[in-house]
Image (cartoon, rainbow, N blue to C red; front, side, top):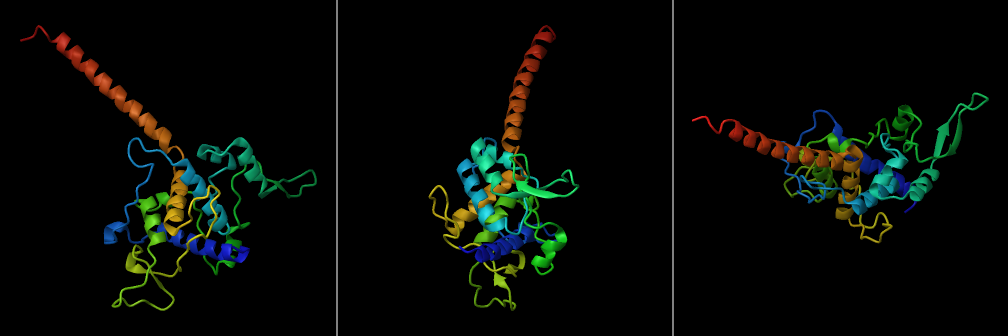
Length: 258
């Protein structure tokens, strides 16, 4: 895929995802029944599928990152997805980061470090708006927290493009999406089969890419999810044991009371 195609695809998918965060947008509760995808991180014992999250990061890098930032994620955070220290450093060095000022009081550019956050594709919001016809591409760090049932919403939205029913009146310049409120969305279908070439050889179907990028963005929004679940489980076990001890103590203390 050429650089131009990547930029176009990035603008499209990002705008579609960004629409999820707009205040006042309709939710699934307003009559749009979302697809129920099976996520590895669901449930009390759920964990992130590292392979899926790494593939999702690849989709983000090759499609979304041309227009959308991930400003709350540092390169070193990617180690939690299974990347080695060497891989993290190599990824960081592929980017150029602005730093400074130097001894002459000037800003300068250097290769990225593991401690750097993923750089924004634009130097400032004004430049982003100029490049996107006045629209500001949203940061994707917390996008799955911006909508109720965020992972399923993103998965459904990215898989929801289809031909409208014969009786449906589609406005000019709009596209039909079965899971978008009102079913009319200005963004054309953002993902197409084999849009990326997965490093692990997985088939890059629309369904697979949608699932993978939703998994990655869910991790980006809540990287401590697994630790939180583990802590909650320990607390529950402690409360169960404590309840048993208190009950046994009560029985012993009041054993002679009739």
